[in-house]
Length: 188
Image (cartoon, rainbow, N blue to C red; front, side, top):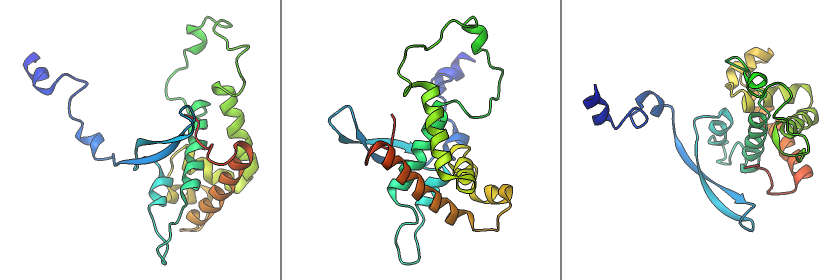
């Protein structure tokens, strides 16, 4: 058994053919706020988000279906959603047990950072979008549901979701620009 693990390079370095078939690595440029607003290149999985898949599509005249600022707004909402830890829990939450109840609080920290600040930002963004658009963005950007599944869940006609999602992302991008200024979409 040790010979097999030595050949494979250990468990962590073992090839993952199933995971690799679901990855499409791409690069995007983001502004690095720590380095005097210089752009930096970041590697990410393009197949992970339905919004990124939709952004690769083109209109009949060859123009992009989603502009880069719309994709950045979707990624910003998803990043806030993940930071806020608002997703469904798949395991038991041991946080209160491990911190001993009231210990380990974050009192006195900046309200912009941490899960509370991220939760507030997600709440403001969804409130800005309203019921229909907010539902679409929440399902596609945060829960990473596909367009067809979202249309079925919301009871909409087929192929109407991509238009609604584009309108929602336009408004979301405008919301982030009004709140944080141009080019300040991403947190990390």
